[in-house]
Length: 416
Image (cartoon, rainbow, N blue to C red):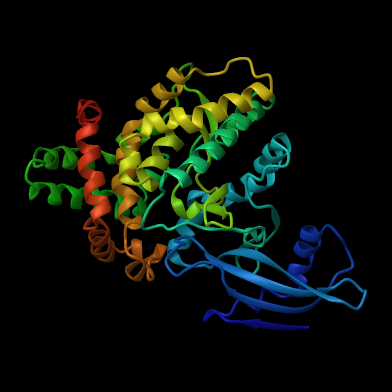
């Protein structure tokens, strides 16, 4: 058996036949496989993944009938580094493993044939953490254009799929309420908002945004508001995601709905026909408004951001209701309930706009060197963030959002 790698950091020392055989047997739902050859290449573009390295592993195998066949797997690898250890300590990697092992299989069973996410085949921890997944590219799923953001057709499929995901999770939470106890916090909790990483990225972007607005005619008044938000950002962020018992429409949130975490399937005319979600490090139980605000702030093109509520009513809500009715779910939220959930969490949209969109708005060349380790460095973070914040997409989205949500921002700042 031979093994080849086309990446600079050679992973073939641990992605070998012994570690991959079990995953392959799960993929093919068979046993007695002999691995003949392994070819390893990068499974994503440089700079597209901050917390891990993605490998595509093509495997030539034989089932004892003399005929070699080829398939592929995806391996999400978490190499040890100082920045990576912080992610480990924050619990994001353990959470993703648990979601793939405990939650997604149960959601998939309830949904039936429609695919929600890639299957997780195996997890091994030597020489560091690795998760082996189904390669969705073999089923025709690929990434959309990060820089451009989602147009209405792409957003339609994203909204319909997240609606099905949310509604199915409501049924699962009804059947097993203990899930809420184990998934109370997402990307933001008491630990993360006090972490060096949070301050390096989110605090920095709010500071830079405040400086930009000072020099922007007609928007100067937002500069001081943004600095006040920056001074209290941890507390404001926690308030934006805190549960509101008795008022929240509680779902299992994906928690990190930006365009790189979507894989779309296209027809022969290059039009999207389906989507699945990947990366579940930020998942938690909470208001459906959190996922929806994150999705629009991070990934929707500006004209769609301006019509957020209409699009939620057009694409998200009907699928949500249809799915809940199929489960004979009793307490189906009204469209008013859903819109109110989104409105109540709009401060989260503003936080995501400044914290996430600058990184997404970077051009492909600049983003090639993006990594978690770099964003732990304040000087590098400022330099890179300014590149994203100078993009037309970010500037126009910022202008619109600040004016549209000025009252929301003022309310959030009232205690300070």
